Length: 276
Ligand SMILES: C[S@@+](CC[C@H](N)C(=O)[O-])C[C@H]1O[C@@H](n2cnc3c(N)ncnc32)[C@H](O)[C@@H]1O
Image 1 (cartoon, rainbow, N blue to C red):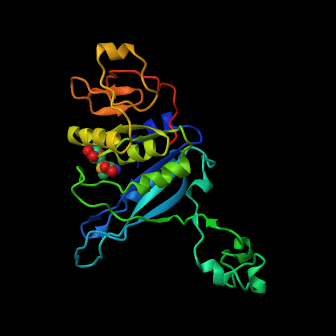
Image 2: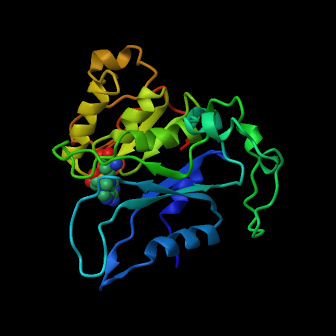
Image 3: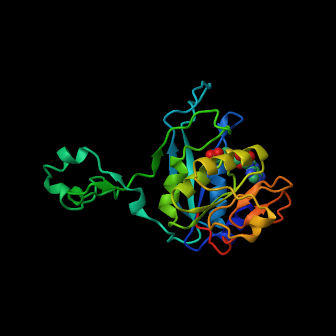
């Protein structure tokens, strides 16, 4: 399989940056089509490191009935990088260890105090004594996050916890987060709320407007509307959405591009690197 879309991401991504692809396979002619697996394999053949496969577990999937399948309750989020050592902030995503420790760690047996191989030599050894006095642990790579309701100005809005998880884990504060399928702007809202900058792209004018609204209301940024007078003034060093003639659809820190990709305005964001 020959892919070309990835080259643009490769070209701008920091050496220690990450590309997270949320992609869902579908059923074609009664069976699961494997284009998702083939896409990831093709990306690896072209140099990307498949660091991990995350499962987004949706506890509230759309109900339905199909002859040979159950409802789709999860989606992939693939973590891809240019190297095997991306920026990775374990501490940022740690969660409370939970009540189980009080009873389980109170009386540790001999086998709990040293790391030993599992009986069937599967390689999944454990040493429970490491968890004594710990209050936080790393979460698993299965992310259980409920879908958000409809009527959000877009038919497929992310729950904000999903992009927020990857932004915290894979980008530093002040880093740059890019969502080339920005939709209603959830990734951008999460990025701004977490102290990152963002670039959003969408080819639908209605969704662009909705993203503008959400970035203002939930991301707490001030939309920048260029007038001649204002252009001469200092521009806030944050994401700027520029409204201009020709209905620009691409809003980013370097300005806004119209349908032909012509940059309409440059800002102080130039030189920031892509992190995620
Ligand atoms: C699944 S939605 C993303 C929703 C988003 N995560 C949110 O929370 O609102 C995908 C978006 O990609 C946009 N899109 C599809 N093809 C595109 C393209 N070729 N260029 C730019 N945007 C595109 C669609 O308009 C749609 O809003």
